[in-house]
Image (cartoon, rainbow, N blue to C red):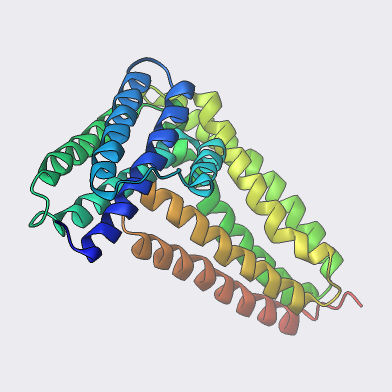
Length: 289
């Protein structure tokens, strides 16, 4: 006879397992080759685990539609690799939770072993071509954040006109994005790697243009340059947070280290440029009315 506390835990496990069964099944339908086989295998294991827990709870539990929808949206937007990495973290947490009931249900050790195997299978199966170009995206993002944040900060104090700042920033950003895309193309073409130079340059350019649009946008919506700059800095923080999280999950790196590093560099350059703009305006006597 199991305790009431253990039964509550098992009910949670049962719901998680049946939910993950449906997620893996849908992902398997979208995958090909070895990935499809691995995801189907894991899905069937999750279904069997759910049925195993049902023997102790005596109830049939429906999957969490919200969780299924969430992961399917993540896969649609951020790709299979990111989704699998997120699922992998769930497998790691499941192993820890199962350890808590081993004393009452020794048979759970078999499930723990299979969850360990799932983790290995998920790590080995990842084969998504577009994720290989994440370095190009990060290159475009980093360069755009540092260069444009600094340029907008400097222009803000030098010109103090949102329209002029926005126009100058847009021209600078578009020109820089084309330059970065061309540089990435030439760089990849000279390397003996598997990446397609055109695709790499495309990812770099798109990341740069996307960042430019977000950072320059506020200067076309606000009339006061400091308000516009403050909104731009908010976008800077949000972009850094999102890409730090994305890279930390896909590359299995420390999120905090990446986030702090990018923040210090981007905002540091912005602060220095802000001072340069102040000095330029004072000594050059710039006044645009």
